Amino acid sequence: MKKVGFFRSIHLKFVIIYVLLILIAMQIIGVYFVRTLEDTLMTNFQNSLEQRVDMLVFDIEEEMVKERGKEDPTKEEAIRQLLKDYKPSASDISEVRVIDASNFRILGTSDPSKQGIVGQRITELKIKRSIALEKDEGSIQVDKQTVKPNRVWVQSTPIFSEGEVIGAVYLVAKVENIFSQMKDINRILFTGTGIALVFTALLGILLAKTITRPIADMKKQALVMTRGNFSRKVKVYDNDEIGQLAMTFNVLTKKLQEATATTEGEKRKLSSVISNMTDGVIATDRKGKIILINKPAADMLDVSRETALSSEIVSILGLEEDYTFEDLLLEQESVILDFSTEKKPLILRANFSVIQKESGFVNGLIAVLHDITEQEKIEMERREFVANVSHELRTPLTTMRSYLEALADGALDDKDIAPQFLQTTRTETERMIRLVNDLLQLSKMDRTDYHLAKEWIDFSLYFNRVIDRFELTKNQNVTFVREIPEAAIFVEIDNDKITQVLDNIISNAMKYSPKGGQITFRVKEEDSEIVISISDQGMGIPKENVGKIFDRFYRVDKARTRKLGGTGLGLAIAKEMVQAHDGDIWAESVEGKGTTVFFTLPYDRTAEDEWS
Ligand code: ADP
Image (cartoon, rainbow, N blue to C red; front, side):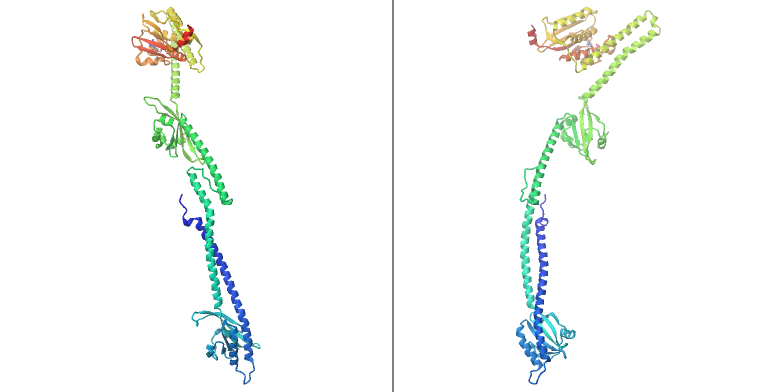
């Protein structure tokens, strides 16, 4: 954070405010005090002057109205004498003049050096006015005759006798004394103000420090907190408002620390959930740029996180042609994405949800990717299965309908054709029953709660009995070769189910065997399993189709097998049953030479020993 400049600091503001306050206070006090003092001093001066002038006026009036004899001194002499006597008692009076009101001439002056002016007419307006207006006239004037211009008090007082003005006393008194006193006082005040200001400034700095120190501390603490460090505490200096603020700040720090810890914890939990979930998650900013992508999403889309983080979501999902980012924001349904390659099928379902503020402002988008390849495959298989079943049922039904129609149309009366037609419908009906039975069998196997009724049997003995049954019923010119160990081989199997597996494989071998062909039955003991194989010398299966013969409804040559009465489900059922026994089933075939179908069953030699 930027440092607070000196001119903006609280320190300076405090000092300026304090200094201004003191300055204003001192100014107000000073002006008021000086004014009052000046007035008081002037009034005292005037009062004391008044008293003395009154006495002088009284004496002069007496002298002026006095009856004089020949030997008495003249009026002027008497007044001069009076003024001479009067002088010492009034050191601040520099000159006193007495004026005769009858002719406006000066009767006398106390200043010995100005005796020349006696008898002259007065020129001062003040004297004339005081005589005319019959009252005191006084004011301060500047005496320019002195070296340094001096302020003097000039006053003219009328002299009354029997109600009439007979003259005037004009005096000049020194007032400079008062002003110099005032000057001294002003200087004292000024110095006082200066000292007070210095102290105030110091006090201001101190006070500002006491306020700014905890504030600066809090600022430091807040800065440390922004870096995620909550261990520091603000020092509480006092229990005043700032102290309480510091305490509250410390409480706030603790609360913030707890809140941050909770948020961090939640964040960690969320990120661990996101990275550990099997679904892919992509989050974008409000413009559609990817800001988060978890590993499953990156794996599904086969991009590195770094590449994804600098890309737009629409391009990463390969949706640029059909969607804009705004479309995705409004997309309510899930979008199916096909990322299948030649090597690997991959179908993804993307669900979008908008990250919105309460105000409705869109902050971004979250896309959840779910791998639905398996689901889609199952769904496709289901559809294919339903189509196959319908087709398989429709073929015999159509055949039956046409034969029944022919019979109804008159073939029934034809003794040669009727039994033949009826035989065909019967064969078709049997085929349908077989088909439905096989379907039921498969659907039973598909159930999750499917149980095997397992029991321990001697497989050699059991296998020979199954082959015997075929040998008895076979009407074909094939020979059976048995390569089955004579010793008992004990395995735990569901008798009925494995019988069905063997029935399906052996009947196929017989079905596809040529006349005079040989069918070889083998049982081989291995460490943990026995391998049963049935080989024929039939026409075999093309190499590329060998793996598919265990699929439902798969037939190498549809027309031919249908003729042979196959449903295309026999080996599929066999596969389910062998797998239910934790075994494996496969076929090996050479076209034109023959086919061998193998299957394994779990086998435990130690259990064998126990039996023997
Ligand atoms: P189906 O009831 O049609 O025989 P299966 O599931 O038993 O159905 O067999 C599937 C297909 O595998 C048959 O249609 C046939 O084409 C082929 N197949 C099975 N066993 C043999 C074999 N021993 N020799 C030649 N082809 C066979």
